[in-house]
Length: 260
Image (cartoon, rainbow, N blue to C red):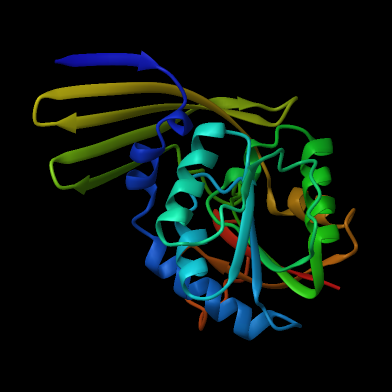
């Protein structure tokens, strides 16, 4: 049976988690290495804004860190808390806006690894997010932020695809750029996610809008939050031994931000 729906991939946490969970081991190792190399404090508590299904929160929790997070999507929050409970960890993820939130207790490190920051569609939202993160971080704490920059010295990547499998469940995706509105700095993206089981096929048709950032534009935003400084930059290879010097050809960049 073939079915097609127009919906957000975030409303399908099982498929989302399978599709984007392939890098979790390298991301986990990279985060722990960043904590050791760049933090100006001992890292024992970790926060993830827009945590989605929480695949990294669970791994960090099982490794002994106190973990918490927020996300706008109630289905993702429930999925994440159920997963934490499965490993007898506190259900510490709440429904919340990553651009306007408070935490009861400061955290030592935080992360947002795969471009979710760009869902914040205005300068005010992006600034609010960084200000909230700075207020929530302990002095010397880290915010590890992965974003896709718009290159200035080459053509940008226009499409991406991913594929994942777990038993008889196969999930394929294809994302492409529909163009950028230069006035609003919003890139319009199409996304098709095809879900296959032995007896059915489901196509999820999604549309996303990501705010664009050239390197200079991100630096200009960061200057408005003096409590945060860039400790180092890497790429999505997550090699702690090979920092990445951002240039006009850089696209996937991880900013390791430290609380002054």
